[in-house]
Figure 1: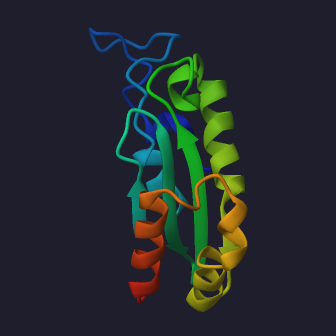
Figure 2: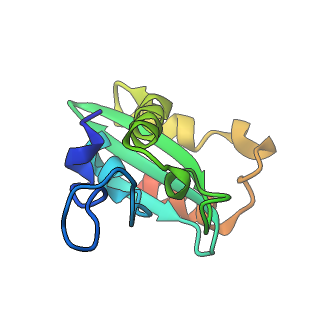
Length: 139
């Protein structure tokens, strides 16, 4: 994963633009997700907390990432980061959580599998919406 200072160039600057030791305004996962690969499909829960589901493409491979987030630093990993080291660890962890496949069909089969019926997110509208978008994706 790229150095988080490059992904979040303003996160260690104080209000006067000077470098400082604390992180601020780090609440958007988009820089990390975009670094993981080209986003083909992304569906986020429409709530103050929930999950993000992403189908990615990178170097001819296809990846699936599903992760949860919250509304405050007590329940959201990104907002809880207090140092660049913690932020880098989170970004590296999300990168390692991506499940990669050699073909789009393999990724679709994994994502749309009936094996997910027992998972906590299976009956959520956004998951079903994500599956439909993945089925329609042509890569």
